[in-house]
Structures are given as structure tokens and as C-alpha cells.
Image 1 (cartoon, helix red, strand yellow):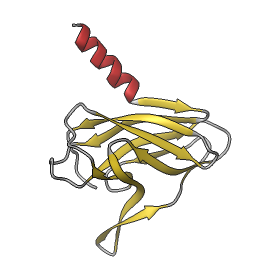
Image 2: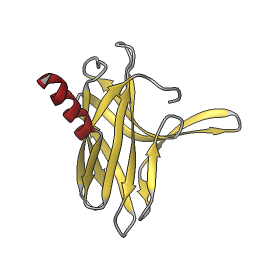
Image 3: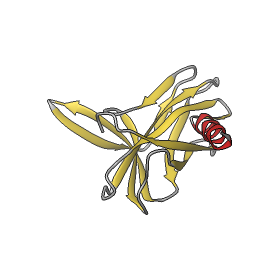
Image 4: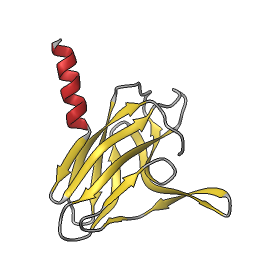
Amino acid sequence: MKQTLLTCAFLTCASIAAAEGIKVENAYVPIAPPSAMSHAAYMTLENTGEITRSLIGVSAKGYGMTHLHESKETDGVAVMSMLHQLDIASGQSVALKPGSFHVMLMRPKGPIALGDGVALTLSFANGEEIAVTAIVKERDTGS
């Protein structure tokens, strides 16, 4: 019973993180085959502050490299490109989701399993960082 309560508390805390003017919700990494050389992380970023905030990087414990990416379809072809900055306007939310904005997690140093937590650090242009734990969940569709 205690283990179940602790797990529920961890998952609740891991799904919401906040810093001055930025709230991060529902951070997750879809499960991938053990041989996968990259994973993706998704979440929703809400700017509750009064000025635009710019996400300029993400680091991930257990990965050799990370990048902010955007997936979109251009002339019927799926294209993924690296982003140097993701702006979140005051009072707005940006969803990092399959087929859109996401964090590419490359060169995993080990396998991930359902229920694991992936430690992410979001870096903003003003120097602020937010620690987020993305929970490994079943895969949805998209990239």
C-alpha cells in the first residue's frame, strides 16, 4: 500500500513542474525498443508570466545529446528540423506533442522501461532552468 501511494505521489509530482512564470505539465517519453538510438519527450509548457519566454535548450540525464525539434508535413513529405529557440508568449501554452514540437533524446546510455522517469532540464534564454521528470509511457502515434 505504501509503495502504491509513493508511486502515485511520484507520478503526480513528475507530471507538473513550475518556475517563475512557466508551468510544465504532462511530461512523458514514449516507450521504445531497447535498441532504439533516439527517443522523444513531450510536454505542455504554459507561460503564466507577463513577458514572452524562450526555451533555448534541454538536457537529459542518461542521453548523449538532446535537441529541440519540430516535425511538420511539407508538400506531402514529413520533415523534422532542429529549433534553436521555442517562444512561449505571455498567457499562452505550447504543446510538445507527436507530429509537432518535441525534444529529441539521442544516444541513450541504457534502456528505458514503462514507468521510469527521465530527468530533463529545460533551459530558458533568461538563464532560468526547470527540472522536469518525464515518465516513460506507452507509445502514441507520430514522431
